[in-house]
Image (cartoon, rainbow, N blue to C red):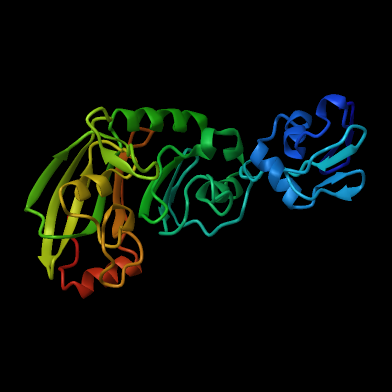
Length: 313
C-alpha cells in the first residue's frame, strides 16, 4: 500500500495489492488502508459502491484480492462524524438567559446523538439555536430525558454554567419531579430505594442489581381508577430509566412502557412519563428557579380517559 490521493470533499485512497495480501479478503485489506475506520463502516462503503478493484466496482467484502491489483476507496464519513452539526429545530424554550436554557422536550425526540439517531436530536437543535454551544461539552447538555419521555430539562450555555450545573446534579441540588400513569393500585406513598445497573441479560435495559448505583425514587399516588394509578414521582438520583425500572420492579410498570412490561392503555403509544417540574438555584446568579410544564396532549388525554383528577402537586 503506497499511495494516497485526496479530493476536495471526500478523501480517496488508492493502493496496490502486494504479495503479502494475495488472496486475502478485500475488507481486511481496507482496514489496513484506512485503520481509523471500523471494519463494519468499510464493509458498508463496499455495499455503497465506494470501493473499486482495478476500476471495477467491488463485488463484496469477501472478494479475494490478487497481487498487483489496484484498490480505490472513497472514504465517506461515518454517521457519527456528522452528528455534531447544527440543525434548525423548533425548540420549546421555557426560560433563557446568557447562561441557562430550560426546554420542554416533546416525546419522540432524542436528546443526544447515538446509534440509530445521528441527527434530529436536541443537541443538533441547540447547535443551531446557540452557536457557541459547539465549544461546550455535549453542547451544554448536563442531563437527559429518554426519547419517549416528555418534559423539562436544563442546558448550560456557558462553560461556567455547564460546570456548575453538572456539580449541582451530582450533589442532588437540581430537583426533578415527574407525572406518570402506572398499571396497578400504587399505595398512597412509596419510597423505592434500589440500586440500578445495566441489565446483565439485555443490554438495552436497566435493572435492580445488588452491585448497582444507589438510587431512590419517592412515589405519591394522586388517584386511582380502572386499574391505573396517577403518580407524582420525585427523583433523589438520576439513573438511566430510574422511574421506569423502580416502578416495574414493584409490579407497577408505566402504561405503554413496552421495555419494562407496561401494556398499552388509554391511547398511549409511549411510556406515560412526563418531567413536569424542575427547580434549582441559578448556576451563576444563585437565585431560586422553578419551572412547571403541563401534561402534553397524549398524556393529558390518557389522564382524562382514566377518569383521574387533573394533576396537582
